[in-house]
Length: 157
Image 1 (cartoon, rainbow, N blue to C red):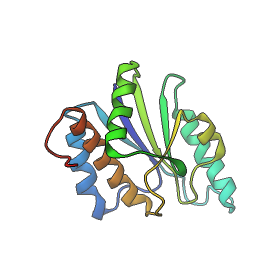
Image 2: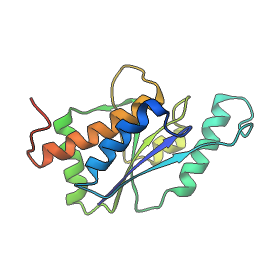
Image 3: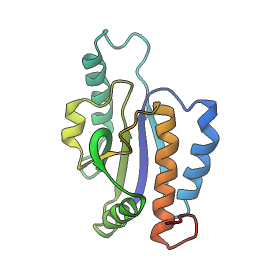
């Protein structure tokens, strides 16, 4: 199974690059993993948050394949503990999922079409985080889940 982390927005800010790269490299010891960033060109969105979300969704949907297993991060999603995330990732592997995609929305969240296309909607927290920080949290939590799955010492209960 391959894991891909997709994010809508600008390239990683310098304050998260090292952490995202570090945890992504660690996840690579368990699964092939990649990041993909979707960024609208300046002045592409015609003003309204809804229009912007629709344009972002169109880019993501164009890249999504029918066999992809999409997990959208959204504050209204289901919360998972780190152990539950480990089980979730293990279960996708056991189901022979070829590509597990975690999607982080843009500044206004995800368009409804993407949420409907998702096979799971996950809430990292009830707190609101900057999108750049969510990238770091996602990379770390995937690594933590992988280490839990192998009974390694990174995670402590």
